[in-house]
Amino acid sequence: MDEFSTPLLVTVDRGKNLNDLLAKRVSSAPHGALMERQGADGQWVKITAAEFNKEVEAVAKGIIASGIGPGERVGIMSRTSYEWSLLDWAIWAAGAVSVPLYETSSAEQVEWIVNDSQVKLIFAETQALADVIAEARPSTPSLEETLVIDNDALATISARGTQVPDFDLTERRGAANLDSLATIIYTSGTTGRPKGAELIHGNFYELSENASERMKELLEYGSRRTLMFMPLAHVFARFIHVLVVPGGSVLGHVSNVADLLPALATFKPSYLLSVPRVFEKVYNSSEQKAVAGGKGKIFHWAARVAISYSRALDEPKGPGLAISLQHKIADALVLKKIRAALGGDCKYAVSGGAALGERLGHFFRGVGLVVLEGYGLTETTAPVTVNIPENIKIGTVGPPLPGTAVKIAEDGEILVKGHNVFVRYRNNEEATKEAFADGWFRTGDIGSLDDEGFLRITGRKKEIIVTAGGKNVAPAVLEDRVRSHPLVSQVVVVGDAQPFIAALITIDMEALPNWLSARGLESLTLEQAKTNPDVLAALDQAVARANRAVSRAESIRKFSILDTDFTVANDYLTPSLKVKRNLVLKDFAHEVDELYKDVQRID
Image (cartoon, rainbow, N blue to C red; front, side):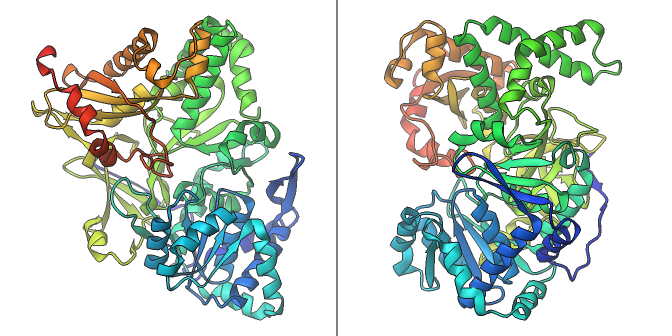
């Protein structure tokens, strides 16, 4: 099959906008919790829909009083927080357009985004971020003011708006329609300058209404709570903070991922949204903890049972008596502890951004956490496809969401059409034209559809490696599998125009000490780890396991351990944790050359 579409479940009046979505939640359940904030004592404080709306109105009036007109741009440069969500809704209530900036952005990036989108006002989380903005300020004529959230920016802006009449706010809230610009999200980009994807109210409104209807079982399970820890500057997190409104969920925020596990224990979410790397970390840390406690064999047995049990769920007869009994024992000994670490009440998770891998997907389902893989991009307002609880195919990213169509081009590229697709790239007509083919958005990803419309991602079109022998290799398959090893942080597969496939690997220095300790080995520096026989043997095994997924011509034949990891701070990762492949290949060209210095050794 080369094309599949899912019909709309909910039709939205074209005169509506996102403010109507919030108003509907406030009207239907004014005293029900919409969000919760964690206090200094670690306790979560309920904020009702009516209370949240009151804060939104006060900040929106302040934005109006600050001279921000309808359709003008307001920036948010902050980590994920309650204030981020509040500001976003307040900007929309003021009839303005929000522009997210990652808190990791440099002054040069700030300058580009502010100038490209013509931001007039920015809310910065800290004085340090305000200083970054100040560095760009001389070259950003549109920017009139920066307010610091940590310095009571919300109180300051609210105080300004006390004289703004309710009528003016009501008029602003009703001015936009589904075709009006809601936000400009700049793609973090693995190459070149970020492009500003213009997303309209309809992209978020129609998608969230239809997704909440399609994903009822997930959104309405248990306590209907989710904890946001991904950056709200990223489209996936941004879509979820809209989705919770029609979905009837309670939203909490965690600014620092280091605080995630304690927050999960107290917030007790019923569903989570994350990227595969987080699930890999949960598995690896659980494994290392078990090994360090002398229970490695029990953990590995329980993991195998969990995977076998999950695979059996897909069989017509389901799990037999023997595997079911083993699963109960594994649950009592190991699996329930992993659920407890996630808060104890979490049944579902949605994973996006990269492939999770079938083994990990089956493991977590065997644990009791059903991970629903999905697929989307900034230009599609996040989700295009997602597995749904009642129909899961592990290893796929599910069928299209209602109102969305997916098509596979002749060269394997995934094309998308629907109400979630963006309008244009801001101030970039050439890139906009290149992004579409006969009305279909060209994703740049390669994939296939099965006969039920389930999409499988096989790689990036621009990242396909063609070896000297003419073999086309999708690096993602190998990279995802190698990266699942606890010692591995990042992997970049290389081999374009070369006689064989190789890889650049970085060590996870956070995981290394525990891995060594669990095996009775002394602590090592990165330089020592690169030549340590035990470390090298473990990485050989990781590569061998990855190679089992591909043909010999596609397999990794050599690898090199780099002297540094790839991080957002050193600019080798985007803020959404994607490797900037072109930059890595450029800066580590010598290491790549060394891999092919003695090609005659490879048979």
